[in-house]
Amino acid sequence: MRDVPVPRAGPGEVVIRVETALTCGTDLKTYRRGHPKFPFPFLMGHEYTGIVHEVGPGVEPFQAGEAVMAVHSAPCNACRMCRRGFQNLCETIIPRMAWGAFAQYYKAPAEVVQQNMFRRPDHVSPQRAAFLEPLACVVQGQGQIPLAPEDSVVIMGCGTIGLLHVMLAKQRGAGRIIVSGRHQERLRLAQELGATDIIDVDRQDSREEVQRLTGGRGAELVIECVGRPEAWQEAHWHAAQAGFVLLFGGCPANSTASFDTTRLHYDQLTLKGVFHFTPADVKQAYHYLCDTPLPVEKILSGSASLQELPEIIAQLDRGQGIKYAIQP
Ligand SMILES: [Zn+2]
Ligand SMILES: [Zn+2]
Picture 1 (cartoon, rainbow, N blue to C red):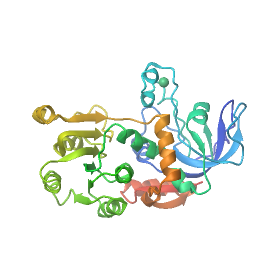
Picture 2 (cartoon, protein in one colour):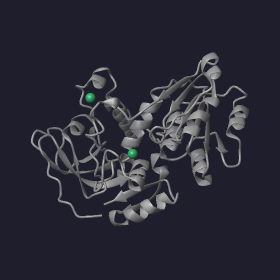
Picture 3 (cartoon, helix red, strand yellow):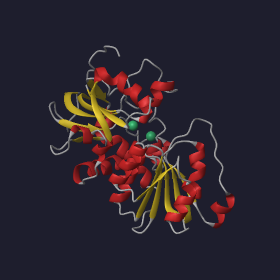
Picture 4 (tube, protein in one colour):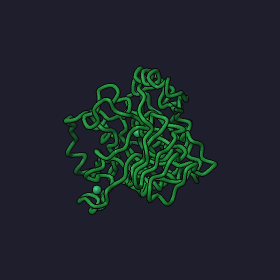
């Protein structure tokens, strides 16, 4: 923790007085082992909401004093990937990500202000609004895979992302939602949020359980949110014929996974990777937060001040809690 100057808003930029910033698995990973693209010292935190403190020249839609919610990146809309329609894979999105929400003041770059910033309605609490970024990722993920009302969905992993997938699958009308994981309290929370069945991977054989729960067919949709090659491999065993496997969890660099060719071929499985989100996903996530009862706040393990952040990160590192709301 150190003191830094309050950022000033340049052309098109907005400085926000942060009300709530959420901890995220990415923050924890970065804290543990550093980040190849963002060397320390580095301002962390990227899931945030707050009050506009200062607007730069040329910012029309927002004014000082207004509550806003936003994400930490936006596409350039000019590069090859953006022009191909993959704004989530914009060639310059990673280096231009604006971190720094674990602070009293956060500066949103002009492209975020233009594309991914919204007014926060009065009925949306800061803790709820701060879920905009992780929910946008989950919206992008589920947008890759069709979901029909009677479909069974297997969600592997019950951290923040797995639990958001549970809520969204329920909201979208999934028939059966089977969640596998290893923390008792998280599995119970998954049930509370809409899982119809849970599998404790420490005590049960998940492959057998999924087969039993789906009448031997497997699930039409499998969403992997663990981020380990073994889980990527396991995911395709849970898929029904013509099923979709969404490989959501990022694995360590250069790791590999292998798949059964017979299953992929004769059962016509689709394996899909997914990364980040587009402005359309952010708008959709904004709609879910403002206009639906999606119970995202239930994921929060508690709240803490900025001074308590190192202790909170240490707790998360020990596996205590899922996600905390930091109130600078
Ligand atoms: Zn995040
Ligand atoms: Zn681009």
